[in-house]
Every structure is written in C-alpha cells, then in structure tokens.
Image 1 (cartoon, rainbow, N blue to C red):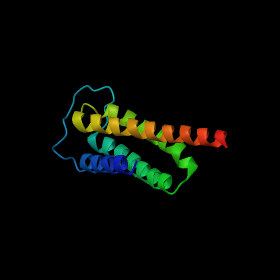
Image 2 (cartoon, rainbow, N blue to C red):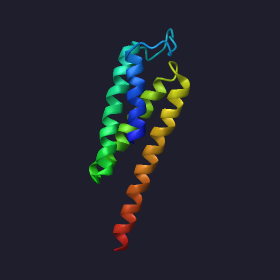
Image 3 (cartoon, rainbow, N blue to C red):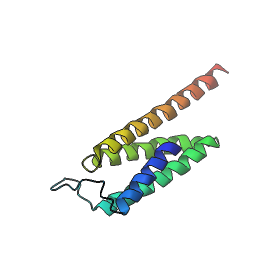
Length: 116
C-alpha cells in the first residue's frame, strides 16, 4: 500500500506540474484539467500511504479502509488511462493486488479465529 500510495503521489505531482509527459485528449467523457486529475491522484496517494502505515501498525480498521481507498485508486487510474496508459495500467494492477492482499489477510485471520 505504501508503494502504491507513493506512486500515486508522484503521478499527482507530475500532473500538477503540467509535465509534458502526459497526452492531451479531446472530447474525453471524464474531462478534467490535468491539474484537477493531479490533485485527485495526490490526495488518494497520500491517503493510501497513510492507510498502509496504519496496516503495518496492526490497525484492523485500516484493512477495510485500505480496500476502499485502493478501489477508488483503481477507478481513478482507469479514468486516467487516456493521459498516461502504461502508468495507469501499472497502478490499476498495484491497486488490485492491494485489494487482494488485504482481503486474503482478513480471510486468514477469520479462519484462525474460528479454529480456536
């Protein structure tokens, strides 16, 4: 989660700075300014990074929160596909892996609790 959050933060900073790296699209359904998308990714990245730190500290609520934020991150990166497809696909995969890892961890803890 910390890695995914850091990547989203870098993505947001690059978009806010109007880096020449991004494509400009016309008539895109989810048309925001590049800076608007940058702020969305920056805020989601910071929240994901903080949730990752909370998961490492052992907070149970952070797992549920992390699943929700990683889901929002995957959706935001799906909508970001026309601007930078490769980075968006990598972050979609990272966010889906985060969701899988958090849900698998919750399932294993539930199984261990029923065995006792």
